[in-house]
Amino acid sequence: QVQVVQSGGEVKKPGASVKVSCKTSGYSFSNYAINWVRQAPGEGLEWMGWMNVNSGNVKYAQKVQDRVTMTTDTSTNTAYMELRNLRSDDTAVYYCARVAFKWNTHTMDVWGPGTRVTVSS
Amino acid sequence: DIQMTQSPSSLSAFVGDRVTITCRSSQSISTYLNWYQQKPGKAPKLLIYAESTLESGVPSRFSGTGSGTEFTLTIASLQPEDFATYYCQESHSFPSFTFGPGTKVEIK
Image 1: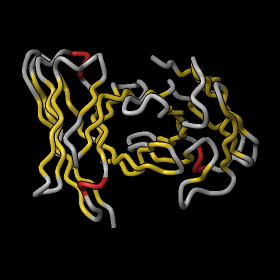
Image 2: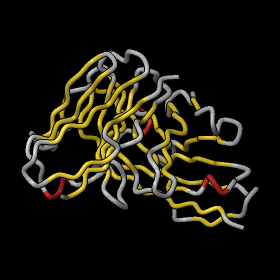
Image 3: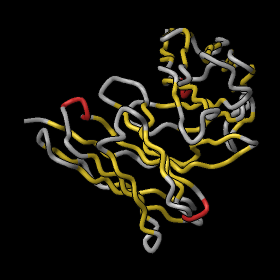
Image 4: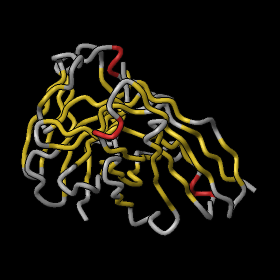
C-alpha cells in the first residue's frame, strides 16, 4: 500500500537551513507531483510549493520562494524540501503530500506524518 | 491571488446533529474545491474532491455542494470521530493551492 515516511524533527537556530525528506513507497513516484504544506503551532495549513516529479517543474508560494528549494530523488522515491535563512516564524510542522488528479481537479490524497521544525536561538 | 474564507471559524455541536460549514472564494473557482479533515496531532485527510465527490472510504454522512464562489460541507449526523478541524482548498490556481483558514468542530 502507499506509504510516506518523513524525516525526524529538527531544532535549528535563526539563519540556519533545514532539509526535510519525504520517502514514498507503494506507487509510481514519477507519475505524481508532490506538495509541501506547513502548519505553525495552533494555526492553519499553508501551502509552500508544488513539484512535478517527472518534469522537475516547481512552483513556490510567494512567501517562501526566495528561501525554499524542492527536489526529488527518483532512485529512492524521495522528495526533499530545503528552507534557508530560517526565522522564528518558520517554526511549524512540515508535511509532504502526493498530488493526485481526480475528476478534473488536483487533490492532496496521501500525506506524510509531518516533520516538526523548531527555530529557536 | 484567490483568497479563501470559511465560516464559522468554530462550532459546538452534539453527536447526531447536522453540521454545515461554508467556504467562499474571492473569485469563481468552478468546482475546483476540496475538503480535508484534520485531527489533533495528525496529518490532514482528504474527504471530498471536486466539490462533491467523496474520497474512497469516507462515510456517506459527509457531503459537499456548491460551485463558483460558495461551497458547503455537510455532516448529516455528527459522530464522535468527526470532531476535528475542516479545511477547504482550491485548486483552480494550479499549480498554486490555497487553503481556507479552517473550521474547528467541537463537542457540545
